[in-house]
Length: 166
Image 1 (cartoon, rainbow, N blue to C red):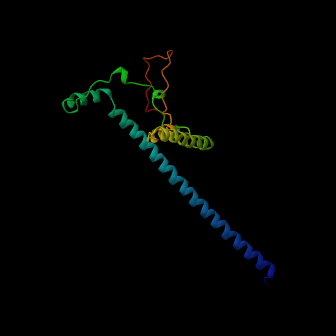
Image 2 (tube, one colour; image 1 turned 30 degrees about the vertical axis):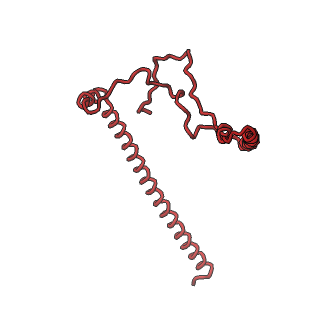
Image 3 (tube, rainbow, N blue to C red; image 1 turned 90 degrees about the horizontal axis):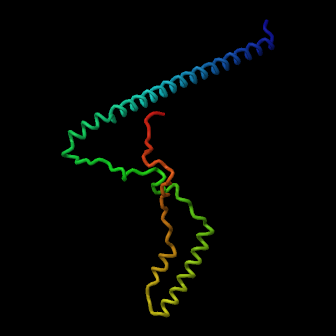
């Protein structure tokens, strides 16, 4: 004769076994996913290594020299002059590196520009000169970033180059 307490314990035991089985099954699925991701990562690393080796072969100076000789008539390549080489800091800034103007300064300069253009328009109309667009264009002109000059202490013979190696 089974008592109700025994039936409840059998039910709890069965539920616990089912929950344990589902947790074990989920864990096995996660382990399989981890192994799949590790295999994909290894494949990508191998592909990167293969592409680096291919780049090293393709950019060998002897190979490039042979290609230049073979296609010299078609390409008409010229040697690079030493004056054509610049340092990275001598290049103009990228658009992403240009500083964002302050909004309050922009509003203040816009107000002063409109006041200045209004004054120049009044003066121009008094003098009989109809051209006020030049004054507005010069008031709104932004300064162009200029590359920094090379320092005298730098070694001019040293050229910075990139590397395929990490």
